[in-house]
Image (cartoon, rainbow, N blue to C red; front, top):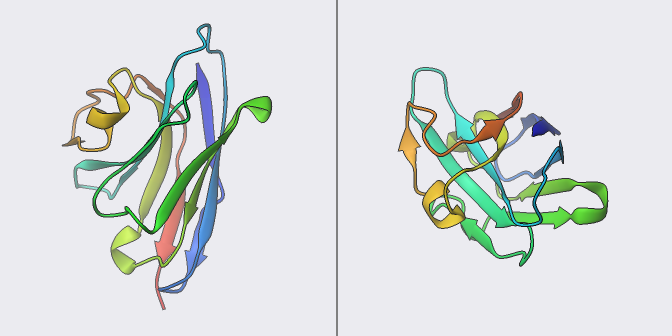
Length: 129
């Protein structure tokens, strides 16, 4: 499985960004695509996750109501629409194909690779005035 995140950048507090995750290589119809973020020296934080077949979505409490995850199966792309961004959202954002259920992926906060499955290069999001 290969994944590639893009769309990061510098935005002012209260602004918006849309991240994209292009993926390939899945051999089954049922899988998860998730977003996590990490600040150097700190634990990674699950942000959001979507189930490929049902489209069910999951969010960390810190982003619920501000971030929206969606998918375009025809394009093999998952999006993360981020609104009302805050300075504390600043991090490198990665997309992953978790090997744990979405409900668990979004509550994981760890320095290990537990639950990540496969993941690609991240994209920097900086929220600053």
